Length: 188
Length: 236
Image 1: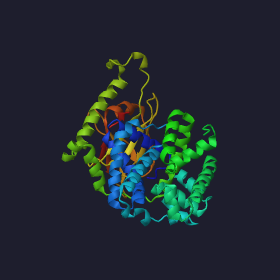
Image 2: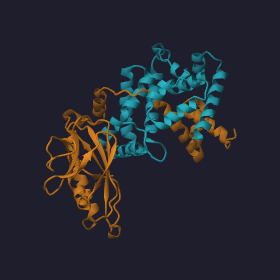
Image 3: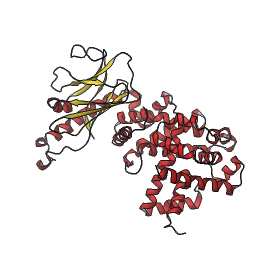
């Protein structure tokens, strides 16, 4: 089931609210509906299956405990759960010893490619497809810098090393990139 | 810094959402967001947009051991027997049935003032799950109105698809009388079933079951195949 339509978003709100009231069947349904995408995200960040599984367990335990405090007027369920997943994965990534070399193993060339087709193919949500359209307005390396920040939690210094650019250049890329995204997505 | 400039607010919120805002600047930002609603809204806007990046990853189904471990961590006592679903389903049914009786029959409810008799609060929903607790459909009943009612049905990803067969939804009335067909359930996507007024009250007190039937539904008007899913309407 693609989680894109308004009805699906409402279904997720129902399931999360019921989970918050202690309904385990609703929680199981929520897991069924969302875990594949969030596990995909955990794998993208952590690269290793065992680490991603550990992260996703922590994430759903946290979702269960924090479900009562979820507020539908502030964020969509997928946004809320995605943020929890990303934060947990980045924490785990940072806690690994440096010699782990996970950052170096990960390639983000697909974001630097002129063809964003493979990314669009994996995308289930129409709003995310709109974001990809906006990303096409950025230069390839600018896209890559933004993807590295999001998926690897890289700070400006690390980005500069990874992309072999002066730090000032990387900062400018990101700032201008975000400005372009702001006006592009704000106009949608 | 002049914090009233929208461009500054916007750029800080964007960097915060992306994660490139670090250290003292991040802490300062978090402090400001707590105090100002416009900053909060702007940050929510960016968090939602930036999170869309996550949707570009390929979905990968986790191994079934992952769910087992989550289950064990959250409910250690129940998981040992692996029977908690049934206990829970029964418990929930009993509690929600009681709630429903009180809701639809306010005369019996000491807490409900008579003036509110015409109002039925809450949303009526049911999860239909199989014996291994895998949910197949989520049902939502439109708010009680005197006339027509509508049951909206959404199939869930864990549903076992039956090729060349149909899933038929039955109402099992609380008075133990014969099952009444409500309609066929979709094997993917959503559907909407209209409920006859005379069934409406029974729908809330009775149980729901789903049987496997030939395409087009049961030829006899009674369930002919295996009952794979069950549930009960409750109020949230």
